[in-house]
Structures are given as structure tokens and as C-alpha cells.
Length: 387
Image (cartoon, rainbow, N blue to C red; front, side, top):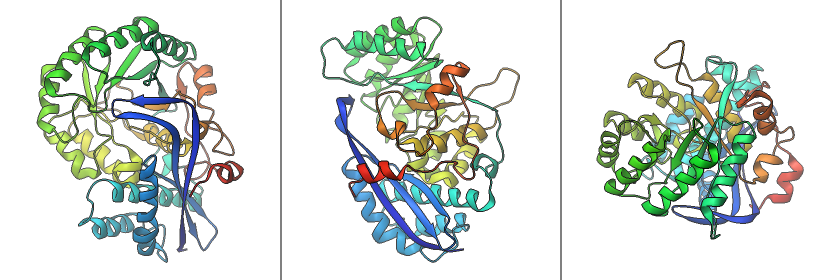
């Protein structure tokens, strides 16, 4: 078997309402999917991290840099292909867009591996460590409306009512406004419900500590990306200053080498590699092993279509218990609850996340089919494909 083509597919759809976070607002959703074709008719599906214009830049890297390197090769040589591509792009991008592109290809190769052996991804990665996985409902994004606190409170109440046992909100509007929003969300969720806050590296160390103290008093579980990702010393300072609330980060890091810095410098309590950005499934598993050697739990970051949601369902299911015990730390699946056609119509058979959450009280199971276990809705792709 050999690779005959890599097909890059960019999808976009307009949103009903403009949403935002600490770095800006957006009114379109983008998904960059890959199909790795083989001479035996097996097609691997992958996804590349990078929204909006970054998807088009990534498409050029796929077509002009990576495709010539991998076409004609055995798709089951996953590790060799990974290192050959990484070595080829190292002088031009040890982080960022080239690694995002390598990630998408690597995901598709694992999908081919599973389809060629009739095994689900979780089995190829060592088997499920748990029969079902907890999911947290991600929502409460910025809106250009006046009473944002009331909107946040109502939104988290719906997340609680739908069956989720944890939820994450966006902050980064200034410490004083953030505290107002966090209090509203705690009130809307009720006591005892697990809450997390993400500021997308909006703050200096001093501001992050000031906000983190308030979040800790409101019994938030973790504080995500408090400072800019390059500031390892700042991360460490924030973590040292805020015992009692977990510091999380890692979505803006690439490969084992970047995550090594977060771990060796003791920057985070929870590591959050993004599989579609950090180097794919192959590199995610290396990062996971390294993190556990440092005693650091891993909860994957995921921001993308249901292709990535499916991949992360497999990844979360295979994460072993750390350190091991009867009442164990539980990794969770991140799930965006805001309106998103790429969660609702992209797959020929939907994942049914919301239905599973309601039926089980907050838990889901990974797909059981070979590879990632999904197939694309080709009519949907034809409708929303822009490149």
C-alpha cells in the first residue's frame, strides 16, 4: 500500500452571532480537513488546526511542502514519515503552521492504520483505560451585548441542565469585568459544579494572580492560559502564587520539545496539548508519556470539527490513571456547546455527544468503527467547501 494523494479541504460557514475571546471576535467557522488517499482505496481522515486565513496558509504548506514528501510512501510507516517531515521543516518552522500541517497528516495516517487492520484507534493506542469518558461543556464566549453577565449565567444553567458535570468559560475583559462574569457563572451553575476559566494569555503575571485569587475563592477548578505562552517563568510564578486552583496550559505549544519546557519549568498543574497542532497522534502520545513521568495530568485541548472531537474521544479514553487509586483524577473531553454546523452535520453518522451526555449524566464513548470510526457527509462538504 502507498499514498497516492493528500486532499486538503477547507470548509467555512457563517455564524448566527459573532462570538469572541480575549484576542478578538469571529463571525465564521472554519474547518481544515485532510483526506490521505492510498492505492488500495483506503482513505485516512485528518484535521489541521488553524481557523480563518491560517487554514489557507496551511493548505499551501500541505500542497507544496508535505505532499511531495509523503506521496508514494507506505502510510503505515507513521513514525518514519513523522520524523522525515519534521526534519524537512525544522529549519523553517519548529512550531506553528508547519507542525499543524504535520499533525493533520499524522492523524489521517493513524486512521488508515486502523482501517487497514479493522481496529479502532483506541485499540491501536493500547486499549481503553475507561469504558466511558467525562465531557465538559465549553461555552460562555464574548458577545457584543450589554448584559453579558446575565447571558453567561443563563448559558451555564442550560449546560448544567443538559447533563454536563463541568463547564468552561471565556474571560479576558479586564480583571474587574472578569470577576463579575465569573461570579455570574458560579451563581448560574450552582455550588459544587466544576467550573474552569480560560483567558487565552490575556494577562501579565500580576493581573493573572489577582484574577486567579478571585477564581479560587469562587471554587473554579482550573485557570487556563493565564499569561502569554512564551513566558515560562511567568507561568511558574502564577502557579506558585495560586495554590488551590490548577493552572492549565499547552494549547499554544508544539511538539514534545515545547511541552518539555512547560514540564521541566513546572509551569502547569494540567497539560493541554492540542492534537491537531502539536504534532498529531504520534506526538500526543509521546507528550502524554513525558507528562506522566513528571506526575502531570493531561487533558487534551480540542478546537475543531467533529473529526477532532472523535479523535480526542479516543485519546481521552486511553489516558492511563495517574498516579493510580480508587478515587482517581479523571481526564475530560472538551466539547464546544455554542452553535456549530461542524458538530451537527459534518459526519454521515453524528457522534451524538449531547444525546450521550443527557442519557448518561455527563459521559460519552468513543466511536467503535475502525480507525477514528467516522465517515464524512460528502453533501455537507460539497455545500460548505471554499478551497
